[in-house]
Length: 277
Length: 264
Image 1 (cartoon, chains in turn yellow, red):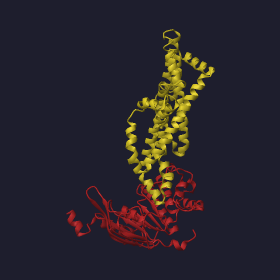
Image 2: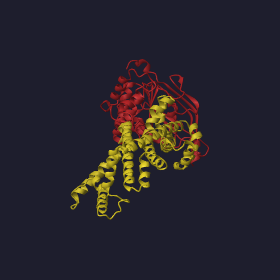
Image 3: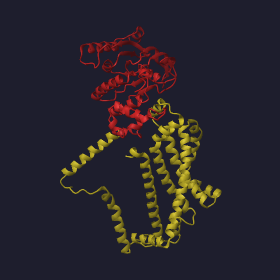
Image 4: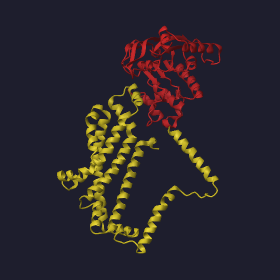
């Protein structure tokens, strides 16, 4: 399958290359990345120019360079690192608990039909509650301190990890399980040598979306009541009417989310080895 | 490589009285009164159209089907469940995509002590001609190469009986013919008893010491035809064609009066 797709890709690329050579007007080849960058760069440039011309109210939409300065000042003052460190810590801790729980429950329900029949309906029912809706309850039970934030983030990370692992383990090709049976693998060996490796690609997808949700919920948690963290910075910016800080925080969330996702996918590629491509 | 003497065993005694599947509308009778004795070192091909129960029969011998009336004996011992005394190759290669060629072959030693596995794996990779590809992954292999790896995996545990379920059906015609020669060469080197299921009459005549023809509804053995031609066999030889034709006729003439009544 893969080779066929690969070949199709090659054929397609070859055809595209040929078309490029043949089409007379369009000889210069612009890399895709540059094409994709045209609009954001254009917007940034326009934004900067309009801001400098005084056409944008600075307390609503400060110029990109001003946002950059805001970030720089925060970094120099040392506040930035504290907020970033705290937010990262929350995401890491919440994601860790959520992913571990998702892996345990997902593995259990994926392998034992009885566990699935017992647990899956309950988990699915809980999943249909938008996780943010639990916030008042968490606050009531766990207070406004770290525990309720970590719980919310863990809950967000739990479901995709659980779901992907459980489904992937249940859907391992029965033909491969039969191969394991032929060579008389015991249950443990069957899981270790056939089921888990077969489920690994989808499990990694689950981890990645779990991490994405962890970021989403850290924003929610920090907006709803925090005295530090990037989300708090945003609230602070809103309270004091400084759009620059809000936009700088948005940028930080984007950068950090992207960076951790990249790390997770690099880890995934490592684990998948030859199957990564 | 060592105990050639005991490798000469591999006698199979099949006595399947009744095998049914819970089907769409009630129970579907897959096999009925299938009695067959296969001699040590013999190459037997089972041919039949789809739905004649040939694959089911092979799966019973492999130990993958448990729910049937009757018994199958390997060297006098009743088969219960799967075992490393039998190697199985399916129509699909069923290799594990996350393991290299070498690791896939070693998988065939799963339940065994793995002390000298390195040499065994190497031996069988050599036998199927893939020693150059031991570090490749399945997706890098062609269909024929994948099937060779599957054959090496089935043989590495040194089974007394090799079971092949339409192993070449998904290969192109040229590769299939080459693989047929290969399997004969491997069989001659290993002297394992081989049972190969196919729907290809020519393949059966080319390979088998005896061809077992099965007919459907219920799956029964219709006839057993010995092929007494020297190997390598010539597919264009007169006698070869005569045998092929007589097998062909078996397929296209109605057999039992019961079958006649049903179709007419």
